[in-house]
Length: 76
Image (cartoon, rainbow, N blue to C red; front, side, top):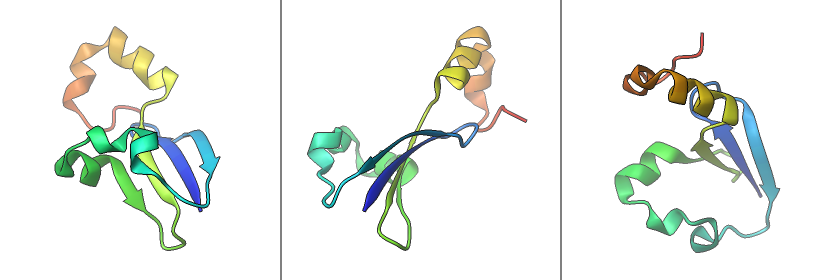
């Protein structure tokens, strides 16, 4: 099983972990409430976990353009 980190804005791969067992506490996901888990964590049919995060490029774009926070996908 792999854990894939993807940017929620541009969908680029940010990182990947290959783990036989996913411990939500080790990943820090136990700090998310149920709604946040539904929004940021998904499971693929092969058992892989996909965690939505933000890449450095999109973070910089958000810092330069704070109004982008209002839209889900600002990268065209």
